Length: 149
Image (tube, rainbow, N blue to C red):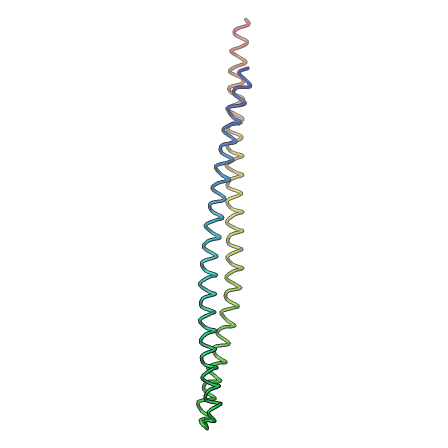
């Protein structure tokens, strides 16, 4: 009877710890996901701004071209500006991709580290609970033996 009570008590404690660590891990994952989403949104906004800038220069280029402007210098300058902006845009896309990969890697590493910490904590707690359980069981058995003698 006492053994069952002690077993039930320790099972409740282990279940509580398991639920608590699971919630902590989920909260951490949510924070990391939100941080990555924010960075991605900022990068996408920057890409949209760059695309708008490119479109404006192309429009200006077409206007000059359609006006029959003999200002080849302006046209060449706009072409080189468009090319430079296209290169910047390509670099930004590449950096965004790299940032996404690094973010995912960082989250995975953090989750793995936390998982290991949780496992270690649970194992430590389980060993401690086992020692306590065995001690209580031993004490209870000694008590029962004394009652019979």
